[in-house]
Image 1 (cartoon, rainbow, N blue to C red):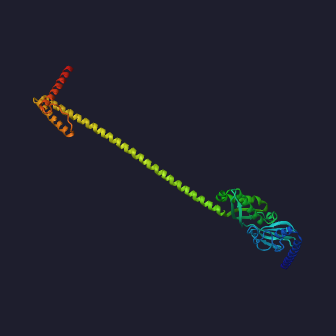
Image 2: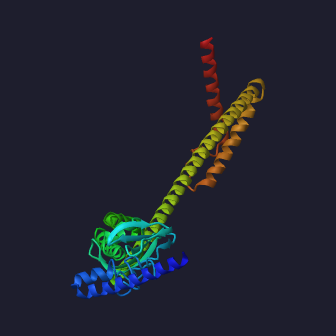
Image 3: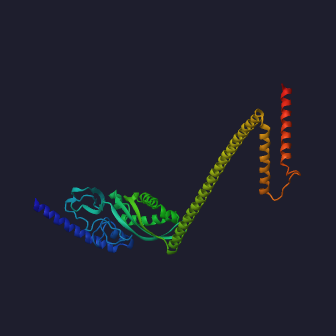
Length: 371
């Protein structure tokens, strides 16, 4: 049995060699467009690799496909690795997709034409120019993350799915940048990434590829724009500093004025209270003085009325006050107005006592009339 399997395997290898030689001959006789289809598509007669295999370099600055080995040959019994999908054609027509694990092929009739990796792939989007809505030229680059979700569409829906999705990412990024201003592009990078992913998924649905995320790595505006942005930032910071300084001065002036107002109010209230207290004190002093003079006058009147020598005592008191009054006039002013009989103290005292007697007799008369 093992000998039979070995012979079958050798026979299938010989058949594959013959098929490859025939493909080379066919490619030489085809026009240029069909040669491109054979070289990049179903059969590459130079290295026998499919679209899903790894190719160094490539358009898009590093579009890598997925395996570095040649397409698997038909050895009847095959083992498909995990996270890979093998496309099998039978007599040149699509037959089935081999899932990971054991697979059995029919010699000569079945052929593995495409190998698609189902792992997530990251490709670098090279630096490119894009013009914003406000006519600023930017230099941008990014990284695209995608994976194959439908191996059949990725193999038959497009000639080179990986190259196509790379080119689509570049054109979509330029289109999205053209709809945004420079400030919006710099401030809303996440929104830009989300829009690019949505646009790629819409266009690549028929290719069996789903874009997982897109990240813009660097954005390089022109040097003159960078200088203008720096000047704008400096001016904005100076403006905020001046505004804060003026607000501080304004608040300080308000605080000083409020303090002066409060101090003047307190001073006026203190002066008012002081005047009220002074007036109350003066009124109390006047009242006490009047009461004291009233009691003194009452005592004097009682003494004069009750004493037989009261008149003499009153005359003596008037004479003393007269002398003291003239003494004060001489001290306080240089100009004096004196009566003609200023040296006659006896006459002055007698005149004062006469007035006092008349007042006394008039008061007695009034009291008697009232009675």
